[in-house]
Picture 1: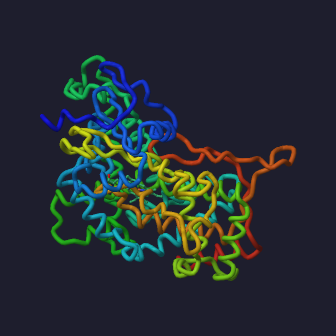
Picture 2: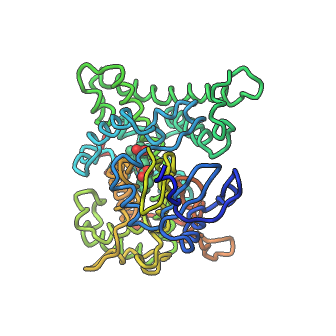
Length: 484
Ligand code: HEM
């Protein structure tokens, strides 16, 4: 009782009952939160319909509160509609507990280190080369090629599945539909049941219980999306033709219990939602950055030429010899952060931090966008400048925290790192990117801004892409042929 008399972290005054609900911005919340931070400090709070939201605008506090407190802040918010749709079985929405720990153990075992990712390098190399092929076949649709490649890469690594190039791939179709449903059922306050969780108990036939009927449909889709690719892996394994993959690796175990099978199935499904949408954003940011900062592209290309030459495309074996390219990747993570507020963590129990009371259920938002644009840490933070990570005194490495915090830190960090690097390396070697021209021949300046949401991507922009030299198309064809 004494603890609960302590104040909450400071923040703007709210209204009775609804608290600060009307103050929460519906767009670019991270910028508003950063401004609030200037007034209220590195740790502040607001009250949203009775729930405490803590906003962290100071990286050191985020590390102390989320990285160094074990499971205390490792829960996720309750999502009644998503739970009705079966999405609590996916890792990102899964509450902290035995199932969560099991998923993390399984994922950690297969893709938990840079070393363990090596078994997937051939798949990554193949998909990054296919990316070039897709871009070169349709240089006006870089966004389509990046999206297709990110999905293809995740399906390849998770299930050893190679998507079909012509027309719509049946698995990608299922995945895209299911992910759209996931986005729908996790949209904040779209469904009344999220504001009044007791509604989840009303029978589906009741007038007004449309959300229950919709949830039943979505539940079937999520089951389908989890089951279809896993069955594909099982069939491939039975025929002895399974490619290395996350699921195949785990299905090799003997005497798999039904519970373990569920864990494999749902941990695998978690890859698509969290993995396909994220890497695509970083790769799109590369095309945006190279349009706006041609000198960066030139420098990266000069480095690749000096190390790799023009008779082959770069591969992982070149990575250590390409420090500027490494800096470009770090700057991509920093410049347009793709998960600007990370994903909220929920306090498992009442806590006291720096003499502030944080009740059980508090949601903690780490303002990663602010950490990455802090002028005290990053000079001229809105400029794309990979050189900030070069030399004897580099600025802070964003990959230390863009993947989140504590027990919830992104389990796909090494997969993301491998995917982003190989795509950027091959793009730098093979493509010249420049601003698109309008009808009068004037270059169009793309705007370095992002969409809204938990995971964001650059706003659509046009760019001009062409092969860097006349051997590029042959190199791409030869590389693809070598995978067959
Ligand atoms: C550039 C790429 C990526 C970035 C920046 C990124 C970032 C993040 C962040 C910030 C979180 C939330 C961490 C937290 O709550 O503290 C997260 C969670 C997650 N990420 Fe990633 N991610 C990326 C790629 C991937 C990939 C390729 C996968 C595929 C396996 C993946 C799988 C996940 C999963 C399953 C979660 C939920 C973890 C949990 O709730 O315990 N991510 N990611």
